[in-house]
Image (tube, rainbow, N blue to C red; front, side, top):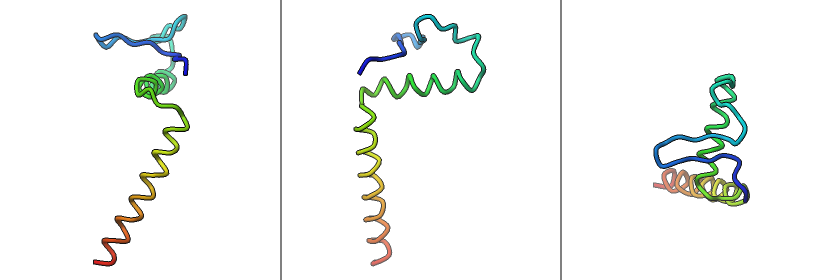
Length: 68
């Protein structure tokens, strides 16, 4: 998967050709979340699978708590 964002070890980050300081706060925030997501190295499919597994495990725990 090709990254849209870049980041450095000093915490700086950006998108080539985009002046982040000129963006509305909500757009800046959304792009920051994208940068965090891209740093995971996971694909969207892997995130979906992780979400399904997490939901399944939460249901199992809730059932165990109810049975106890």
